[in-house]
Image (tube, rainbow, N blue to C red; front, side, top):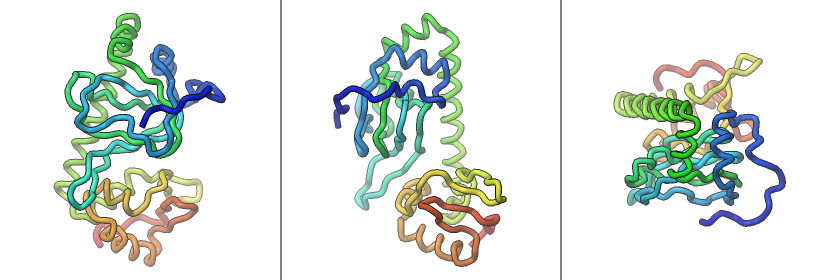
Length: 221
């Protein structure tokens, strides 16, 4: 889906989550607005564009199979960027879709090369980002291989949960059972079957659309 035209009400690049170095790069690109549900990167496409998220949120995933199942690699918000794995000119390994209205600074490879020539330190920042994501993907793959479905669910919730002042933990993302299934490689129905006893047992509850972990999740179920 193409970017939406129109003047932006504010400068989205002023978002406090965007670091000075990423903001400096973003100023060289073109800020575009995308409606919710826009696919800004298509798996299998060949292009070398980097997208810096100024506002909104996107999901990175790989395509559906015959059962309409997908694999979600992560969701990203302001200050993050996506598309770095396409900078080698090869095919895109995943698709990126907007989860809400999103502004992105669109950076071509040529623009990125110019920026690195003038600010060589950014090359190390970009490399560190690629390494962190590769390490996270390796860890996720290991968990997928070694754990059963409940183990993968527990790992996902424990990884995403943020400690709260009252001693509980909360997943700030609004995750549906379908979205959880996409991340841990199972069906929505399987997630529902696993979540129900956790709720009944007082381990989790859904409050205002977000999952709260009321106490430590059991090692096995």
